[in-house]
View 1 (cartoon, rainbow, N blue to C red):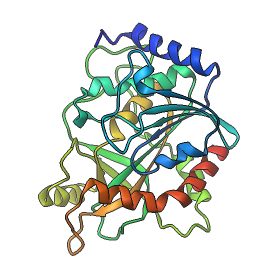
View 2: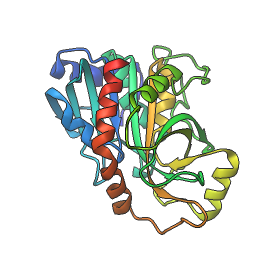
View 3: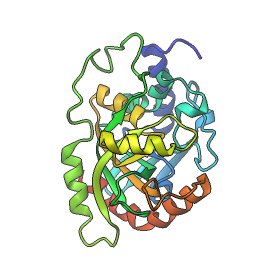
View 4: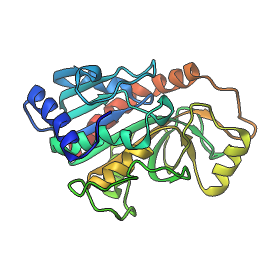
Length: 274
């Protein structure tokens, strides 16, 4: 991959701008937890990741690998149906590409979704966790190396990384929902292997409520770019004493699919109000 300077990101954005010919207000990154939200977008323009020069390709079977522009409710949105992970072989710095694309397209707010495993003993499969903070103890950062000042400063504040204002709007949108909503801390593991029992215990001791293999690199980049973030996890498996079961990717996807119809309506309402 060529040198990822500002001109590189600008060229990716210019290609996408030429296709969509408009400016999105909200960016959405869909993981395993809420991928069907993309089907609710109207007036859509769809671009395969592989057709965008300088972009990446998703290698996870359950991730579609498409960029979708259109309208969701009363907002113009740009949606990544399928995301990228460090475990696919991408260096952390390369994971900056999608969010920096959002920034250059004019996005002011971004929604990130994922499927996660609970380590909080009160959580159950099917719960929805609104992310209020995260833990990342891996040494590497998506922002390591030379800083690109056009996106943000070298050192920046992270006290409101998961924007409180958006979390409050989302909680208001959940009134009357049959789903169980919680606010919690998401802990990032690189994967692709699921966490060991010892790692689960450690995560709980450190204050995590759920664990997963995505989201955090993207959120760090969004914060650096000055983009407000709302993050949400669908709890698809449990790492809790007395509840621990062997987990497969297929089981995670099945649990996420079950929560999607009602979550899609809530997310649509959040986008309308945000």
